[in-house]
Image (cartoon, rainbow, N blue to C red):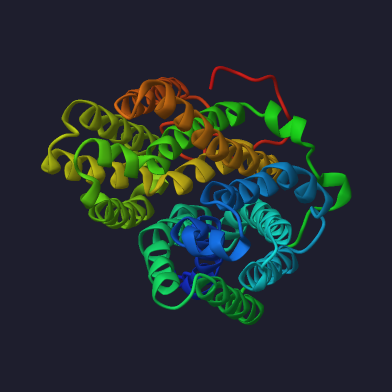
Length: 410
């Protein structure tokens, strides 16, 4: 008589939401620490005895700290456990924000901001890989979306709240609040985040090998152009709206942008596993459409608010999309590739301020959206053409790479 053997299904591992929220809060700390000086610039410049333009360089120094140290520090700490490394980065933020809050010396403040940038470069180089390793492959997109949600939350909620605290209490209060948050995140990470090992010395991939992996350079190209375009628009949105007669609407426009960015993060998290390529192209189309609307209809409030909605929906999920695409393309060399992404991302942010300033002074605010549109067209071209490795129709096709091979068309 035939018998039927029953098998017990393997229980599915629960989604590590608490651990991923700890990573999201760490991302929030990095994003808000970077942008906070912009909201408290008058008080900060007065306390330091320098002009507002000089005080604004605290943002530039932060970006430089990330850009110049991300690759060498990531290489030097590749063998460290990921938890130990992230705790070190958060401690760096706590120290840097405390010094920024209490300093009355401009050089000391610049040094503290440089340290914060170094901590950010270290954190960003490992956060994406950390989130991916906490979950199975089919949940990696969702995990990345949760972890990267700290970016739009920092821009849409953190910066306005920090600015309010700085205006009502004192400019240094939000920096001390960031220190307290960083200390809290350290405890959260220590208690709940499972450790992930570093790479043994013999298995660490040099940056040049990561860049030789098919698709990596194309994802990085899209990253540089996309971030450059966004930064030009974000940095100079206030003077652009002011010259268009909508200066009083800047706060509302940025609120619409921030809320749409949060919605974008949710949408990306729900669909990135199966539709990374389509979502990346769609995000680029939305930002390009934003630039087109602002170029031809910036004098009327309704089109501007619609453009802000498109902008947030397009940009909000970009960090998740590009870091996921780079992780897939980089395979075993993803950590080294992520360090390059951190460097280029910050270089593009610094470049956005410079390029936008040159356009503003040379051609006027009306040229800003046309410049953004000109940058987004090659983003669309590369993302659309790079079907083989960078942005394949199906995720997983380029996610396992054992040896470097000659670069291909995508």
